[in-house]
Picture 1 (cartoon, rainbow, N blue to C red):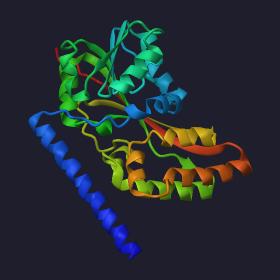
Picture 2 (picture 1 turned 180 degrees about the vertical axis):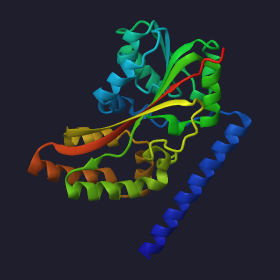
Picture 3 (picture 1 turned 60 degrees about the vertical axis):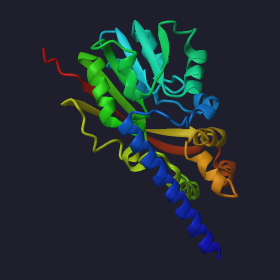
Picture 4 (picture 1 turned 180 degrees about the horizontal axis):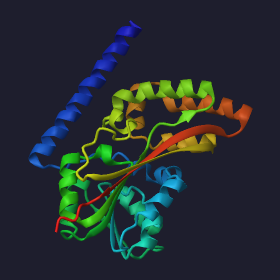
Length: 288
């Protein structure tokens, strides 16, 4: 009986996911943007527990172009702005989540007065940016959420000749402690049906993307972190799939994982995890 109930729950989740996918396809066809705000409700956690590797930020600083206009798309709570703002005359931070954008503005708006904040999805940036006016476009941990074909058309409209596009991201970490890693993989399996994007695309580091420009540089870096239970728990708490899976399971899977983390931490202190980061640097050709 228990297996029958689990199978029914599983198939119900699959049907709901198929409905969401169909709704997205229809929205793309008719041009609608009734976008679910996955991250707005966890903006405080997002700002506190999501961060970028310092080596990757240094690489981003090194590819800054003329220091003119930078466009940070899907800015979230603005983690890239402290790197972008000092190096550019103007930075436009865009996101489809008002709550995320409000958090970014509250955190960085005063410190960096050259930053403006625009509520827009990535596929409509040309409504707010002049044609061929942008020197640098950044996208951090977000390309997998986009309608990529429409996004690149927008990039072509707003990016200057020889302008730069930097696509950044990170994939699942690997824990040094075997018991933690086993429970982490179990958590991932529980969450798998609840992601609203193609996890394989992200975990493959966008490897099969058809980049629009021929000039593409790939940078990979694995960071070894010593993280507290609080930091790991806080980071996973920002995942979009987590709030959904909690509706279907009596026991919160993250709390089960936290118990395993706490047991490992009581033995070793901070938890060792290796996190793969990646970056693609693209340059628009000068065809003039």
